Image (tube, rainbow, N blue to C red; front, side, top):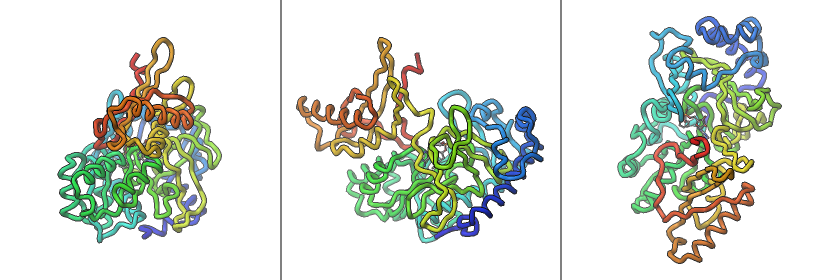
Length: 432
Ligand code: DLL
């Protein structure tokens, strides 16, 4: 079902018109109500009068995560505090968290975006949705929750963790959909298998996001849980889950582009790249009141697709996120994304996709270790068998990544499972 056909199937010219109108309004809003934005625009020599169409967006300066930290907690609000009804925050890896304020209308628009996602996954009033994203400052729990209530489904607000209870509720309430990170979905799948409950479940749909995951991982989860697994995308700064979603065709993530305008830029130069190029995703919020952001640099790497989708939606799609530019490891001059390792592990029969990469520098040379879990039926105490496995995986990774890692084999079920966003790598060179 298409939740809001009037915008999701709008012809491109009308969409551009709507985006242009909304851009003009949001630029006026930040210019008149947010001192840092006004200053930034003055420095760039641009005023709201210079913004007439969506194409003029390139005249506007970027906003970065650093700006959100520098103006922490409320310096980037464009609405009076009395109009803010909720905050969310994301901790990031260093320093202060970033805080985002939402007005009542912002929450309503976010719920609308979330409802579009869930109905694109075929969900509706008849469904029972278990929300196993964390509730609280993280946008996952409350974001998915608002979307479920908006479509009229029964919502189970269980939050993240407590796997035993997750399985109990999922079984007793016969949940039809599960919302959590893909890495936690994999953990739940293993736990269901182990408990013997797997075949007594009624799960049909997975609502998975908040971290990069590959097509190979999708297949792995779909097989293990016997469901259809959909991708949902979002980020705290822009509004949380619901910025984009797949549809039944699963050929890209539709962006709710009447609410969030996407661009792709060269991460080095900041230049807008031609349609179809891979680069850094940038978003401008078109309707937000509390904390609208202009040209926010996400650091996520992807490509935009403008062709009409077979599902009937005309909205622009993005390819699966390869990873964040911050997650890219440069090892002996080669770019490595944890998602490449995940894809290989899903394809090599003897391993589980549970892994951890450690990079260090010893005697001026980069070291590259991957600890990875062996499947129960392939694990043996016999050294030659294990060495064979190590060699097989190292050779496969070498052919995909172009680098030979040192493989450390872990016993079945010995590696830590993630209940939220999985941590995949440690770059010790950054600690030196
Ligand atoms: O992760 C919001 C969210 C919650 C999205 C639940 C989907 C489901 P943050 O914690 O601010 O917000 O992290 C945002 O996570 O910039 C991406 O790098 C990554 N990310 C989010 N969704 C996806 C996805 C939430 N579907 C950051 N695929 C983003 C790949 C994703 N990466």
